[in-house]
Amino acid sequence: MFDLLLNSIMLMPKVFLRTFPVALLVGSLYFGLIFNTSNPLWQAFFVATLTTPYIAIMRLSAMRASLMAIGRTRPATLSNLSRSQLRMAYGNLLPINLVQLMVFSLFYLILVDQFSSMSYEAMFEMAQAGRYLPSEEMISDINLFTNIVGGFSALIAALGFGLMGTPMAVTAANAAEKSPRHDITFGFAHNFFGLFVLYIVAQVLNGIFVVTIALFAMAMFPFIATEYLIYGLVAAVVVYISLYFATTAAGAALSYGQLLDQQKLVREYIQENLAGPQTSPDELRAMRRARQSGMN
Image (cartoon, rainbow, N blue to C red; front, side):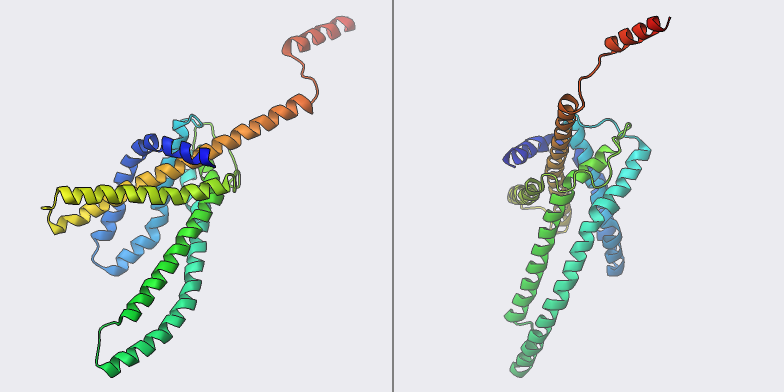
């Protein structure tokens, strides 16, 4: 597991350099549509419909870059790339998103019911006291609900990557010109614990790095107008996403490479120990000539 973590972090800079241009282009379109739309309904629509394809594009790009960096794939074709993109979005990522949605709905039903009863009591007390602003207890309840939902969502995403990380690399490998044609379950849960830990480490390390750089930039350039800070925030998010996807994709690609090596060793073992002695081409030609001469 530690070898996988260390090798993923060492491979990450090379993958990041290949992934960042894609993140910059796709992120500009994604965040541009959301932030340049004043209607909250349209914003919600864009978030609901574009988030999974956006993540799939970033995942596939980072996975392809990782596989190319370690020499585990060949150049892609447009048709195979399109099929892999759809498979990444709706075969690898959508199941994780659906589980997150189910858990979020469950917590919403459980916690909001409890929060509502507490809120009614708090509002009654506020009305008696003549106050109309939210109490500290209500704000604390909202923060608690948000933290619990966010924590479980991140945990499910980490578990999902542990299960589907290697199959995501398989999907990216299938985009090659001479596709290995692995099925969608190939590599399922391979290196589960290592990829699960890598997912969390990538979030923490890259988050600390980006926040540190952002704070340093704000300290160095305090004269930046407030209205331009949103662009700095978007830039920081794009850099974080690129680093995060590069780190996790590197781990998934390395896990896929380990799986291929293990299968190769198994095939060689079977060939050497169970399939019997192998006949060389020269021996086959000699046997064929001897049989033909005997017939004559």
